[in-house]
View 1 (cartoon, rainbow, N blue to C red):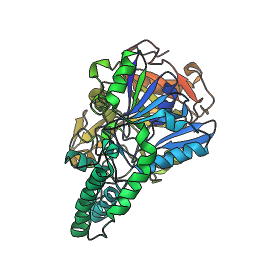
View 2 (view 1 turned 120 degrees about the vertical axis):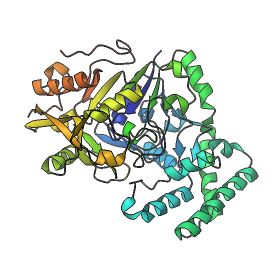
View 3 (view 1 turned 30 degrees about the vertical axis):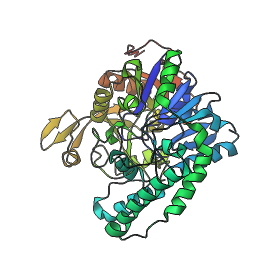
View 4 (view 1 turned 45 degrees about the horizontal axis):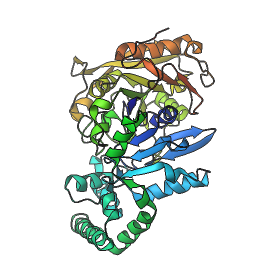
Length: 442
């Protein structure tokens, strides 16, 4: 048995979906533990593209149980659309693989309306939210007035009372604070009841399910959304998401015992990207940034917005290693760097004439930081067909080895293309050498 947490180590969009899909072959359960449909995991399977916003990426493996945990906020309409897309592509039995925690909260249409009205009202102070209602849904959860999946199992009168009370409160906010039209609570209830007709059989008390699986010796993979630097506590606040994205939240948000986690794997893109607002010390606003965006297809899977691109930031990554307790990492999109004569990496920041080796909490301070860059030789070869680390160009190997040396943990997976098969597995954490395996720079 091995239980693994997989998280993003940057500002999201690191390629977690592909790595989850690969590791699911060795897992019995895949658990999504936080976030909502503001996240998007993109998979390319045999040339076909899949984008999941709520369903765990392991759903494409037949017979694997996928769990939406208690810490996730779920828009039921989005979830149903994902099921329909799966069915349209031949995954008829995907609904049978999914379990939803009865403690997970629902996103209502009024959450989305409030989210969008609030963001538009911020003007130049926009956070960059996706407008999917995630923040307002988490606010209702913390305010102890949200709607949970367990409420869908209540009698019709009790469900109606809760929905009408929530929508009434939301309507007062929309009308009085944002001067927006109100929403018909009956229409909201009708939509919830339609979704509930499909989703009720999937609702369970999932902490018991997870512990039973662990006791039975099954492998469990916990799938994080977004990235460490978007964490509500440890990220670039206020330009963050509304949940905790770090590894420890896999246990808190799913009801799984902390002592049963064996491995923590971080996913690291070979360069850095960010969507939305917020400081970004290594951002490239030049031809190189355009090169990375075009070669890497750096457009948001949720919003379609172009991602901001920049050099690898080791300051942020070392912070991610620290707060997550990473045992190893998977590096993705190494192939995108092919064709660059030189590659630069940020080793530290310069702030008001002094060197910083830590990641500041102040976004104003971070915005004033300039990267201290180390130049490394690039390579010209196409990596997309390479399946062995030893076959990579020497400078590509040196780049990965440099990352390992500076982060102090090994790279167990190297991705050289979007396809499932375009992956170099150096050490599988489910079956490999175990925690804190030695770095192999051969």
